[in-house]
Image (cartoon, rainbow, N blue to C red):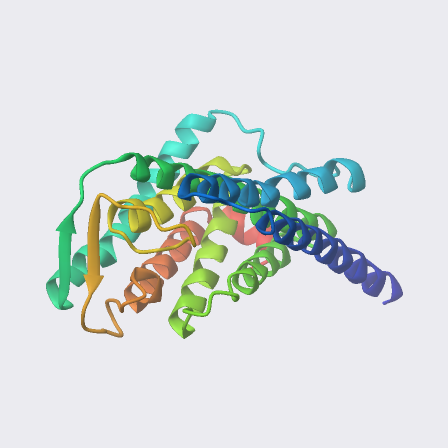
Length: 272
């Protein structure tokens, strides 16, 4: 019992230390004066990269690379593209469905430099958050306990780290939890991060870069602007598809498919 308690505190303290360093560094960066939108974007990119740099340093220096974090993976580009394809389908489906059932307005803005900046932000965000949550936290907990605990812990922590957004509602939290579990299963299935990075990137970019749902604090133009005028509990709200129960359903279906198609590997490993 004592060893289990000490193991828990060791893992918990490491996670808290990594999180605290990320927050302190982010706050310090936010205090640097910025004079234009491009400096805002550059500052945001650096802040996102902190989610990658600090966990990797901990993994190398403190944890002595006791497990594979998952960034070194064969066929990175192919894995990324596969994940991006699935992510595009998953997030586009509830948006397209909503066009038929939710009152909305849609305008075309074209492709601009701002869209490319949004693409860069979405890629760096996906890369950094996957390294932080699925690479470091899930890997750390899995190395100390098992895959099931690692996936669930990282998914819950993923929700907690998004809880600072004041526009979140109960559906948003459930969607992020389901997304965290889905990405955790992808990492377990592929034994790497790049499929999840692709999925995460497409999930964010389709929303923000194509349809104009704001996911970051830097306002950038999108290819289209889609606004829900009338709230709909099933298919969307002014917060966008991440507060849609349709999005949660498709993620749960994805989780079920991953478990079913990899029953021997995943269920045995997760003790389900």
